[in-house]
Amino acid sequence: MASTAPARGMRDFLPADVRRRTYVTGVIRGVYERYGFEPLETPAVENIETLLGKYGDEGNQLIFKILKRGEHEASGQADLALRYDLTVPLSRVVAEHRATLPKFFKRYQIQPVWRADRPARGRFREFYQCDVDATGSTSPMVEAELCAAACEALQSLGFTDAVLRLNHRAVLSGVLDVAGLPADKHGEALVALDKLDKIGLDGVRAEYERRGLSGASAEAVLGILGAAALSGAVAADNAATLDAVAAFVAGHEAASAGIANLREVLALAARTPASGQLRVDLTLARGLSYYTGCIMEMTVPDLAGSLGGGGRYDGLVGMFLGQPVPAAGFSLGLERILVVMGERSMFPAHLTTTAADVLIAQWSAATAGDALELAHQLRGTGLRVEVYPDADKLGKQFKYAASTGVPLVVIEGDDERAAGELTVKDLRTGEQQRLPRANAGPRLRALLSQV
Image (cartoon, rainbow, N blue to C red; front, side, top):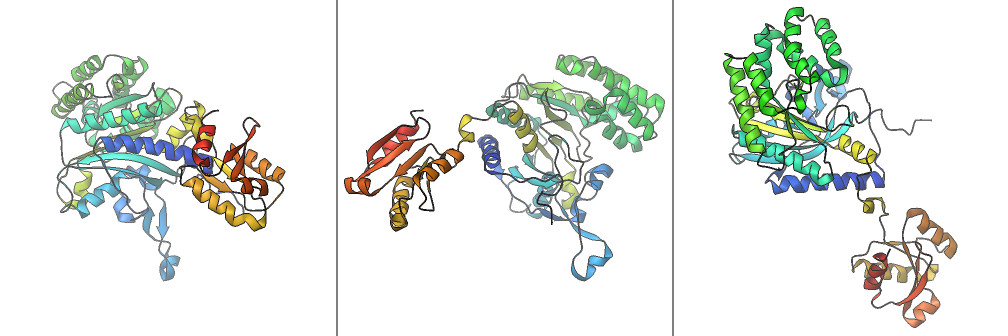
């Protein structure tokens, strides 16, 4: 017999799960729209050449490839792939529809992505990302607004302890250059550094050794970046942290420009809802290879890893268009947000309720049409109404309502019908009363609000 479990790293979402997910994405969507971001959706499947080469070697290995079909199936070759993130598809869309999109295109996108990763707590092979991106401007105001939107979204969900960490790719590259690390090793050095919060300083040192990075240069990098993390510089004054790294890379033009850019972003973001949550973190690397400027990551104390991240990627759209188009974005990970909110009991109480406010009991098969008519009348008053499908004993119908959490059961028997009334049983209190059928909707709504 075939297994009924979903594929590893994938999940079924039962009604309570869907209610929580809908609530969270609704809050995030509302914040994004208040910032002027427009909705976008792209296909789940992309041409494989669209994705390959955009995420670095490790990212390429995590792409879910789709084999050629029909007569080409035996070749074992892939021509399509499930999308790995929402940023590369956006870049393709901007290149494809450049003539019709506005000069400054701000979009949000909430859709699933797929990665052939090892499943873990808060990490799945199919998961949703909630992205905001803006193309067409190099202004640091773009990053400031992305920081503000991400912080406000989490604040609206009830997160009070989230920290938004900032760094800059040019600063990192400058540190690596000054430390004497060859340019062709920068990518590997950043991928390993990006794992610092998971494997610690010794783990990164071992990763450097495994990748054949120079011991002296690696130690110099860890000396300025790793020491900053271990000394708690992430929680220290941002200006002091930037002053320290500025002294280390003095004379390195690109790194100095990156530090200046970070100062501008911090100054602007301090005037937004992100104020107070921003921390410069010199160890933040963001492993994806397409980032070119400011990089960002959102963390909370009780989760290994981040709730989201992003940055500037001015070269990615140009890979499709053949000309540079500035762009930056931020992605919130829905699954990790849900995990933390569930563990912290952060969801509103109403999300645990059933899908119906009222169950209409079926008195007899002959009166089934009356039950449907009554349900239509009550739904017209804004109530969520379920009709019991079988003419079972009332005790069974009450038991079903209790098992699904429906608070009110409405009965229209022969006596009630003759009197133009309804009997209502409140399963929360056990009380039972008669109501006029003509204006039952408002009376039922009043009963629902009493407990």
